[in-house]
Length: 359
Image (cartoon, rainbow, N blue to C red; front, side, top):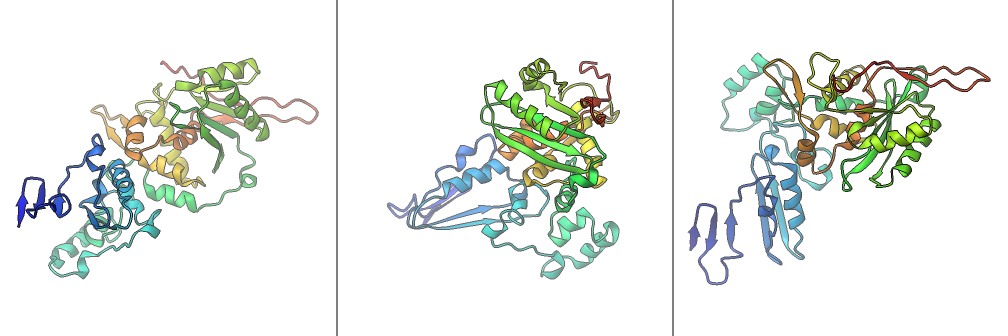
């Protein structure tokens, strides 16, 4: 009745080989086109994702975009151990929970599992350990194995409320990610002590004057003590700011680190942000939280920690982590509060550094 090949099983009935079939499609985030064109109009389509936690977000997006046939029963099943607490499988239980029928199964409650071995794991690792959460309880871990900033930290930060009035004593710092390309959004972020908020995000403009005016307006509106701009695409903005008497500072993410743990400036800012979150930092934007927790790391033979490149995070997320980068820039250097003397013009705040980006 059916013909079986290495990657497909289909009906031998004439005219049904294209509709009565099952295909095993090897996925790759570098070849997402393999998932395009899933059609069975006015019939039924069943998509099964096994070990869904490890499937790249781009593959999820392409598969979802292909399921557009009208008057067609579409069944999408995704299952597997919750090994990663980031990505689309994680969001099936959080951001997109209203779109899915979800279930999390504790291995101790079903037949066919070795209850004694499961209990040994609980005794050895603890009920709330990530190992037991993944392998026994069927819930997502606090941190993936290679995740630098645990999702647990950003989740807690999203629940906090820290008003600007509570941190009025702290310097106001603005971070600017001008965006790498026209398809990425530029972002302006503010941080004051444990308080933070996104001031603006929008399409990258080729006219630096427009973006520079926007930055200057926010600097004046919030009496900012320092403005840090990504060096990569911020040189034009810096030049305009210099002409206006602004003391904006460029920050090269690949520059030297003052943190002995981290390889470069980007890693230093990530580590500072991680410490800030542990101390009670507040986030008010979910995409920013996702950007921060998406970054993975590795340790070099010399012990230096290397955060993965922005391009790799962008490829995995399907978008630029620009919001996270803009917030990271507010940790570029220590900043002193500017002096405000009645009757005199405010004195500019100062970034406390003799930083040489190429040292």
